[in-house]
Image 1 (tube, one colour):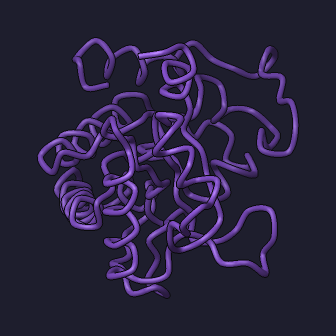
Image 2 (cartoon, helix red, strand yellow):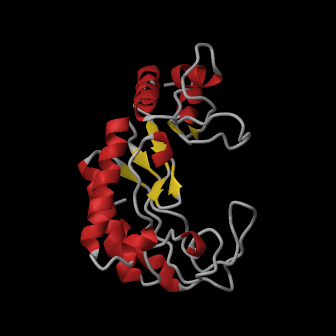
Length: 224
């Protein structure tokens, strides 16, 4: 393998469109540049007027199949499918919705509710041809006013042990359907005061060592 293709394996990229058009940049990059993978969205991030990559279950299967057929090396085909407010495969496009991490973490049904949600999500992703899910969020909900974590219900809990239990259940369910899980975002993001999508967020004065625990525990168990 030449150097250009080795470098290509290091990249997961996004692209615009619900199909792989002949002669398009993404077709060339998948076939010739040996891309490591793609990330799919239900909207175009650079222009809200344009479509994203996901519009229906049948269309998505065709798209993921085309991506696999073009790539010489099996690519990561990824989405953010956390549940709640962060679902690229949404109900408006004919997919099964799921609860947020906060709803799972605080459900009176306990871990069984998370297993139910995770199983349904992983099965749906696998059937759609998606093999990587940028979830679960394992940031601790320390700052309930955090604009991108706490206020959006994206954390299971402010307690490390609860986050670990629910995240482990989520990951194991995904593994059963051959879907890779990716922990996010970073130790200290849950206690931060700003949105890292919008700029640099300094956590020096806010982060707590407990925020490392979910990452340490799940990595030590070989789950990620």
